[in-house]
Amino acid sequence: MSDSIKLAVVGCGGISGGHVNGYRELFDLGCREFEIVACCDLNEEAAVGRAEEIVAFQGSKPAVFTEVQDLIKAGVAGAADVCLPHWLHHIVGIALIEGGLHVQIEKPIGITVKATKKIEEAGKRHDKVVAAAEQIRRNVGARSVEWAMNHEKMVGDIHTVDVRQIAYGPFDYSNPAMKWRAFKITNGGGMIMDSGAHFADMMVHLFGEVDDVYCEMRTLDDSTVEGVPVIGSGKVDVEDTWNAIIRFKSGTVVNWSYSRQCHEDNGKAGIYYGTKGTMRDISFPLHPFQNGGDVFPSGENARPIKSQELQVRYLASLPGEKKERLFPYGSTNGMAIETWEFIDAIATGRKPEMDAHDGLMAKTLCVCCFESAALGEAVSFQDVLDGVIDTYQKPINDHWDL
Image (cartoon, rainbow, N blue to C red; front, side, top):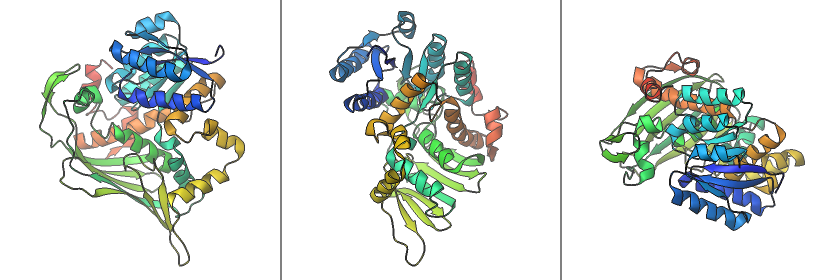
């Protein structure tokens, strides 16, 4: 593997397992364009564990580091896959870029709009690939729906979207991975910022530029959480319930509702209404079309097209070269595809499907919800992107000296 991209996995907690599984799938399919040479985590045991998983499929064992600066100084890697808690994305991401590494950063790419811009600027300044790790839009289910919706116009033009996830499921704050998610200083926000990053990216991917956003949100969870990184302890301050209206310049209006504090067992929907029919998401609604969608065209002789048939049609429509680029080595797994794209972008100099700027667009849509709720009025996407509106973000930016 002398000519392969030398990669480090930085952050060896839960989400890194998905990334490593993506690399494993590529390796099993015959890809030898990369070698994972390092695993880095403050928790040495976690780093050792990931390294052992990697040697099992790759053959060579990654070196283990507990400090990012030691990894940089060692010079063993030319790129890093960053799988860390949100508040560390800009801190570690920029350090790696300045240390000479290309980076792929888990969503959301930065904890605020300003943090995300700083990551993007660092990448440009040092001429490094900065990829946003976003698997949902790359899954075959999501790709087939985007094709059906925007290219084939199977249900005409989408004018209204209704996405709901209403249930009762309080978070388990005894789990260390959930502790930091309870506070905006460490997480940036609640589920709007977390799974909502996937949702926001898909909405922009499907419908284009956002005009404005109105959002109301509440925090019904009054838990006190102990042992939180950075904070120590405190009362939960991120949203667990919201209603948002997102208006796109195309004319599409998205109604987005969520709560994990409602005693409801069947409050899930992902319905996309078009001028000539309807599309229904068969996935977790905050991960739009991850597993595909069903098409219900209007008209007397129209018949439904189930997700599996739609995917077959879509794949058959792709020319060979495009199919290989979208589904490298035959993989239809979004996590494997995002990791390959990062590697290929470094090797060829091309733009990855989702770079820092694409991550910024999704990030800004999420932040529009927070800013609207903080102000009690609709906010312009462009004003939030430009930093004209930052009421919600200011305490976070001040805390991290952004």
